[in-house]
Image (cartoon, rainbow, N blue to C red; front, side):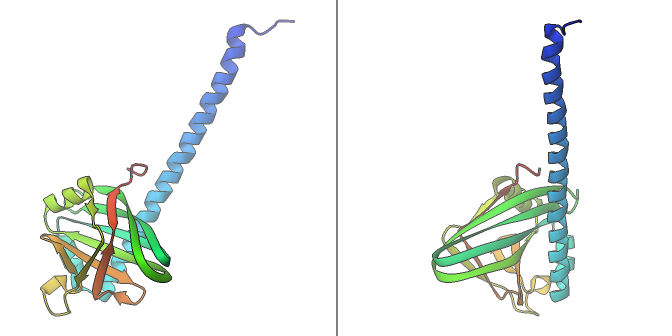
Amino acid sequence: MNKPCFATRLLKPIVLILLASAFSMAVASDSREQERADVRAMARNALERLYREQPDAKGVIEKAAGYAVFNNRGVKILVAGGGKGDGIAVANRTRKEVFMKMVEAQAGLGVGIKKFYLIWVFETPGTLDNFINQGLEFGGQAGFTARAAGVGGGFAGAASVKPGVWLYQLTDDGLAAEITVKGSKYYKDDELN
């Protein structure tokens, strides 16, 4: 009976490891693509809802350099709370997508679970690039009052966060009149890009 040579015995486990690695990479790739599809669907649904509630927003977003859409899921229990969300930033001219994440921390009394959507509008390529590449951070608590309907043209219902950057917030009750950003940070999602 022929005994397998040393090279053959060594080769079998290596082949098995390579096959297992290839399989797990394919599964991970499918999983990442599914996560990307879920984020795209969330953004599409949030935009459709915004356009129903504020029809002028569609023209504003289409004319802008780009936009970003995030979901935010947060919990607050007694004196501490936090949230996180997934999002996507899109350059209108090139249709380039950048998947992003956000985290939020907050202090103060309260109890509850909240879910809302943030739609960022960037008037210039520079403001969009800064958001994507450098992120955005709000320390403490920043509040913005959205423009009332009929004031400010297409940006009615949006808050000016800084020059060239506007923000819509959708809650369960509709378009928010007071937009609050608490200790938030926005950054690229390294796993999905």
